[in-house]
Amino acid sequence: MKMQGLEQRLVQTLAFFLPLSALIYALNIPIYLNFIFYREQFLIAFASLSCAFVFLSDTNVSHVVINKKFDHFFRRFAALACVSYGGYGTVYYESILFMIGFITWDKVLAASLGIFFLLEALRRCTGYVLVILGIAALCLPVILSSISDGGWVRNIPLDRMLTLIFFGQGGIHGIPIAVAATIVSVFIIFGRGLIMAGGGDSIRSISSYLVGRNGGGDKVAIVASGLFGSLSGSASANVATTGVMTIPLMKAQGIPSHRAAAIEAVASTGGLILPPIMAATGFLIAEYLAIPYSEVAVAAVIPGLLFYGCVFLYCHYAHLSIPKRNTDNLEPSKTKPGAKQLLWDLAPFFVPITVLIMLLFAFYQSAEVSAVGGIIAALSVGYTNGRIRLSTIFGKLLRDAAPQIVEITIICGCAGIIIGVLGITGIGASLSRLILQIAGDNLWIVTFVSALACIILGMGVPVTATYVIVIGLVAPALISFDVHPLAAHLFVFYFGTLSFLTPPVCLSVFVAANLAKSKIGATVIEALKIALPAYLLPLLFVLEPGLIGLGSFEHVAFVLALTMIGLGALTIMLLPLKVRLWNQPVIITRFTAAGVAALSLGALIS
Image (cartoon, rainbow, N blue to C red):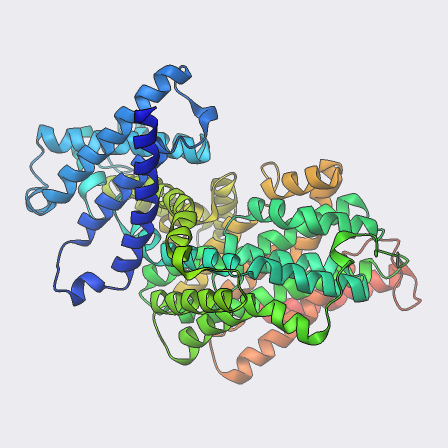
């Protein structure tokens, strides 16, 4: 009992310390205090303590080792090992860095322990998919070196590879985990502050208001899922959160179960690409391209609005023939707030978001500073409406944010293993050359192969990890065809996100179908129909960068108009055949829409 009490106190301490240290480091407070150290020292300490947190907090008890009694002992040993190798790497990092080419037993031991316990912590957090990818990446050089003549892979001894992956600047403790431990962590704290201040209830309030007045459960699902999805960063988790409310509303209004599930799955997945937060992957894009995050968010605005515009259009026309039903017996419509009450209810969501956007785009502040401003605004609104007590809020805010920060940190650490292997051994460059060899001089083939790689490698993997894994393989091939670098990175991000809708591993659709009690096959087909414009958008802005705001105002406006017409007509073409529009025969409206879509999109990419 004493040991369990000590573990709980350690967990609470780490849950407070990890988010606080991320906040302090992200705001460059150590530099202002003239406390200088290597970034990797902070990252090694942060990652190792994150792993220790996973073991001490008994995350995912279903993933025990052998049995519960042994697992208790193993977790305590693992936590102690994490602190040990983390402390060694942090304290001696400077000497290790200067002598990194000399491989010694202590470096190899620390690196081996670090990689092993990182993968074990990852297994307990997310399951086996990413762990298998990480292990496969470590084994890949050995396999390729045995079957190639050295043209595909540099033959590097295992001990050297492990040391460089763990202590080098392009491996585990590289850009992905640096962004996760700083910018992403601050935005996770911002998201938790927004929810604690009443942001989640704000979204539910406007949903209740719209449903009570108009009966538009499908449109409420689109709005609520998009807003939640941008904050949560997980499409399947977003479906589970908002789908509990929106799917019953849609079914109660006569929308078929499979379509209700498909709408929720598509809208929730689209939230990941929606500015201003973009599921935290936008920060990685900005870091890789060395540009302000505001540029990434602005570039993603037009595709994001087009995506949701197409979903809105589909839902509007697909459900015109469905008679309105009385939904007053549903819980969300019991309260129909007036305009003033609605504005007060919406303040916990819109005030922090407005502060964030103003700091980012009007005052040109960094993403970290803007997020802190949003946190302060959220806490202020929460204090004003009585949801937050200042005496306890700071500790609760940090502790609530800790599990998500730890999970994304460990995921990015595993992605760092894969990036490190691809970079150190030269496999990444070889795979990029292979894509170019397959494509020849044809950009269409490059985009198709790249899209396929993003979707396959993204199946069952968080979108942030997908982006980090794939970007080094796909982006160089696209950029070699003079594709704008920002368009290439957004291309990878979009198709990695769409893997949540693409069979056979379409997690968002599976979760939504389970909630709606609908058939998987029908739900998948309906989701693909609704999301088809989203599959075309990355191809379009790779071929025509005006879609992401690059070029003169007149050019962007012209490109936007053509795209709106083309995707709108495509959406009309994909409507259920039993839906008649404008009192015209179905065959006429569908063929007309197909022709307009072909002409508009053809003119765009010609």
